[in-house]
Length: 167
Image (cartoon, rainbow, N blue to C red; front, side, top):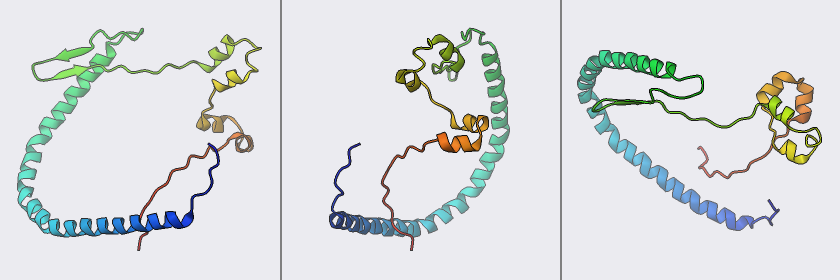
């Protein structure tokens, strides 16, 4: 990214002041709404409590049984998957329910196999090293802290966030 001249601070400060005014108006409107709704919500929660308790009491054994059946179906469908990755039972269906095996995957290359498959003369090229990334967590366990401190480079990414200051 090319360095660009710094924008004029005064103009940006004016924009921030305008944003501040809008954000304060937003806060006031949201606070007023909360105050107005609080009484209604208290009344609703009080009246809804016996209905919710009754429904929760009735739902508890149903949800437990559903969870048990889900686990049994999942375990059986996953156990049927063959070593080559083929899925003999990809889907089960009833009139109003479906159980499906979803398969996702990402390609990866074993690092040792990659090194073995690359000729020694290519291993010294920039293109070879562009293919590699190092997992920091595993590297920290493998290398000494001094070496990690020397090798690890923090790449900076910048974002801008606007917020009101807490008062």
